Length: 259
Image (cartoon, rainbow, N blue to C red; front, side, top):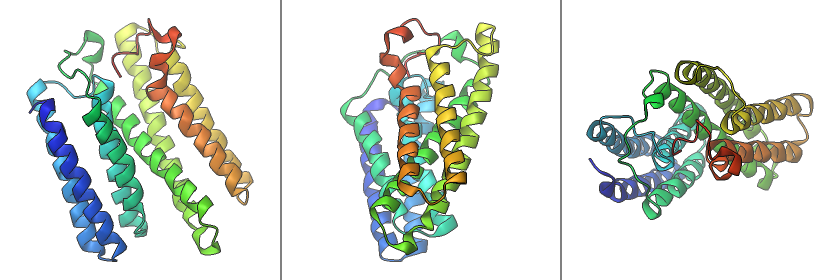
């Protein structure tokens, strides 16, 4: 498997995801779910093929992490659909995943880099997967929140329960990723925490989501303000993921390893 095949796998994933979206809106739940699982399987086949052909986890570059982000966004949509049966969730998850898939098609990056010694750690893969899964959940949570803001009907407000649960779960995996990253840093660089730009923004992101959850806890009726906090938290997440790579202070960072 090589990166030249990604446009085909990515395009098929988007098309199949859109088919699942259409079926969900037509209230054909079981068929829609089966079709979306098929989209995930197609995408998983490419990721697995890249992993095998490169003889390393495809998590070395920013483009490769976008593979996992798109996958987990789609998976998050499936989990919400199975748990709560909201037919609109596939629309959100498919569109968000498509943005990152198309970005990888239009702007591919080098994907043949060997893994540096620091990345050849047992903790590296679960660290990245925990983060990408949390990013997927938190991205879908923001979309759900925006949906609620633009849908002012009273019967839509119960969807805030979905948003909150996605943030709770996403923050949990974010903390797991942070914990695994600290262990990995100790093994690779001899220190659990060094206030590296990546580490600093990871801490800022975690605190931002904690502030959001506390605000939701004590001010449950202030919906619009809560969504603004959630949006700010998501911006912090984007800075943590790839924004820090464009900061001058990150030029010599030990954590800017192509992601």
